[in-house]
Length: 272
Image (tube, rainbow, N blue to C red; front, top):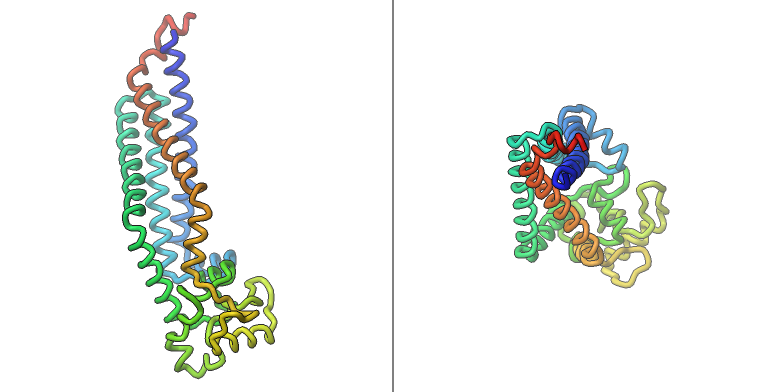
């Protein structure tokens, strides 16, 4: 009797847990397919987020979301159907998938911990590359880099002087009035028109290399990202731990149900 009740409880908990996985997987799969298949996704994303994202980046994100969504959908399907039908095979497949997922997540955590400095170097190189090749200076064609600089109140990877090596700012006559993008300026805003006088003041401060100006962001974006991660490390650890615990609970429930699935249909159990 007691074992049957525990098995029944494990069954319903496993169904609920994997129903969440299933629904989440379907939503991600649908979103990813829309990104990959839609011809107007770039325009739509630009209108929603008010930033310009390269088509190849959108496609990469779309395929990644499709892969994650499909995997979550498959996990949820096997878990739900395995619990409902009490199928040892489907529950076994579910456990294999969950173990693979857990190993992947643990490997990712270990990699980040061991390669922290390398990841930071690669991030700096990416930021520098984007900045040195940037030809966007105003909000009409705002990019993700503009969002980072405007919202993070930062400029450049290390600081605003990184833009001195931007080829276009140095040699292209179209950008002769610019030393940094407008998103490096205090008055810059995606949603509102900035003040021209303040933007001119910001550009002048950048040209003069002033580190104590009133309109120019002088702190590097890499420091902002580092501070953001450190300030929210407790939340990141808590969320990651919570996800791992839920996945371990799912595996434990599946193991228990596999070992006790016959108890749910014990005639004595239902007679009582």
